[in-house]
Image 1 (tube, rainbow, N blue to C red):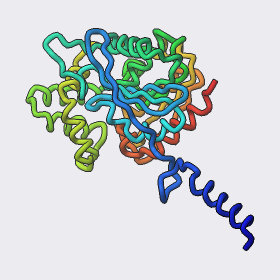
Image 2: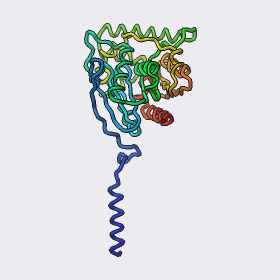
Image 3: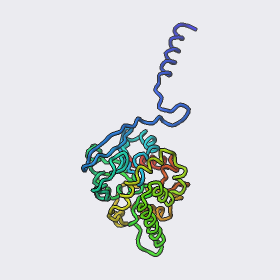
Image 4: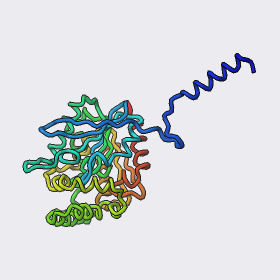
Length: 307
């Protein structure tokens, strides 16, 4: 081999060997983006958040009995394409717990979201909300439509969207029965029993098969959950939903209680142009049950809404 050919081959090997990799060894998945923890003080409270990635911003709002940790898998996937911010709502871990003057009303939490977007100088984010977080996302969009690019709603907690008709009587009765069981559990004050009672309704079997980290998250947020559950909420109706004009994806789990599935489907029907997807083998905690399917649906939807 001539010295010139040897030098050329050596350079090729060096360049290829030094090419940066964006994939995890042995998989086709991109390496997770670095997550950074942050704190922000708004409305007299300090809220913790996680952010990762670059690009258009997506804000993640968790549901009840949880905190920003419920989005762990989605953050890794979504941050490959977006600047992701997942915050823990007021009184949820690792934020300070509720005190005697705690206010967890829907209106106050909508205002929290407004202040977060202002303080972090975010322009027209995608907003992804689960359960109570979905109710916050809808009410925020109704109040500030110019500040939202799109919505993803995982079984939003907006029972007011159901009209009082004979066909909905069973759904309303189910909701009342669950409320009675939860109030009884809250009165006894046993954190694990409170979580188990709720999980048995919305996500049967999930608490029993939850990882130690997931159980820790659930149990750490019982006080905030009780406050969420008992605080006042302005009803969100079908008439309200008809005023939403941004692109919307509504997700439901086919193993969720019928009432939660019906609420999600009705929400999609009331919002013009909304897309409805039911995820197989998923409960109300669908992002934990079927994370890959959930993530794929969210990412595919957001890709179609880019300006």
